[in-house]
Length: 458
Ligand code: FES
Image (cartoon, rainbow, N blue to C red):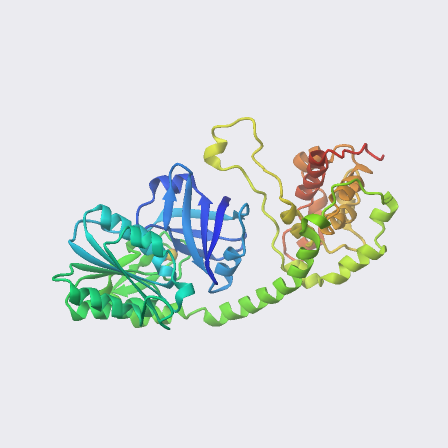
């Protein structure tokens, strides 16, 4: 799992993420990409690395909310973890001193173009950059591109910033102003790249594009990314992602990119519906003021009564189908590189408050909770979990301590997958069990860290 250390919103739907990935930061080169996954069953999304810092052990990616997976990624925040990041993948950009080059980036394509601009400049090229967006708000990384370019033209479709028009207008302006342009690089939406190629071909200038096809494994095995380049089948992940733009079969690319459009739209609608219901709940229970830091005055009977008003309200606030749609939380872990240098810190870092509350929402609060039968000390599992769901973490610890003296230890070492979690109703529906052990550890750790440690109420 890779931690997000910085998140910045660049425009309405475009976000920059700096992610812990020290090994990738060390070995990546301009043009390389990564594949990320959000959630155990998440789609694998290829994203070009926009920047990296070896000192901080981080890489930077820029993501635009366009479909379900990019939306899930953009909904993550600083401190959250991306389930996995694989890379660096693909071939790096071929960099040399070509002479004068035009680099064109459209929309979010400016981000993968930035490292190429920097590398071309460092190799001694005269770099003329064109960056474009539909409007002023959608023009990103202007300062960064300007710093590494000899000249910069900004184009917006509506003329709200820079010059009015599409990116090819800027490319042609550079081509006609210079005595000679040796190469054009273009990254952006496929339709934009196609027209950049036609423009470069009009002046007989070699053109390089970076293709962003659908990918699955990223290692040349699945064939999801295959395309015809110069009449031959190529795999974008291992033969690219950069190709001679004049050889790309653009029609085939457009067709393949649209393969999952309907399925994607349906999934997106489902996700948005789910979020609308969940946001209400999360807002209610994860704001700091809702989270208790004072010991609860409620009795153990009140905290464990399934028919109490607060418990009924919780059940009514979210449909079981919505609870089932939430993905099981993954335990944040220490970065493997850091882990290799320390023997004093636990590998499992424990859930954040938001993670715990979200996971608690998965519990269906069964009338006959089989999970309790699976627990050797009969912890009232739904009750402690529902107290977490309503943000009453010390109350959850109190429920745990009414039957178990050592919940922090049990949450760490009990084989929950063979005990309580093995009886969870979710398994009968072919879904992962509620992470009871993680939640037990969370409530016990929260109590310890709050300083309000109650004696076991046994
Ligand atoms: S992503 Fe599977 S072959 Fe390229």
